Length: 61
Image 1: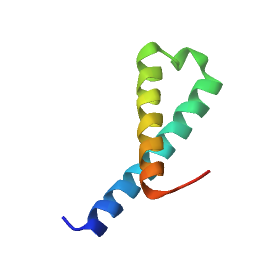
Image 2: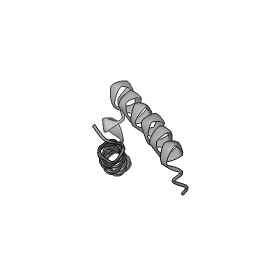
Image 3: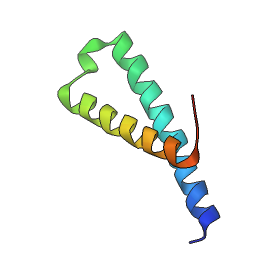
């Protein structure tokens, strides 16, 4: 796999993670009962991976 393929794959992953995180936040805002320990743990895991990929590619907010 080339460097460009890896970058394309990881940036696609970043986009999917950000979308999933946004969906989670909106759903929990509208239906707080969806914020279980399990769903929160998954969100934290997504956030860590988002930070990791943003740092790798020099993406700032």
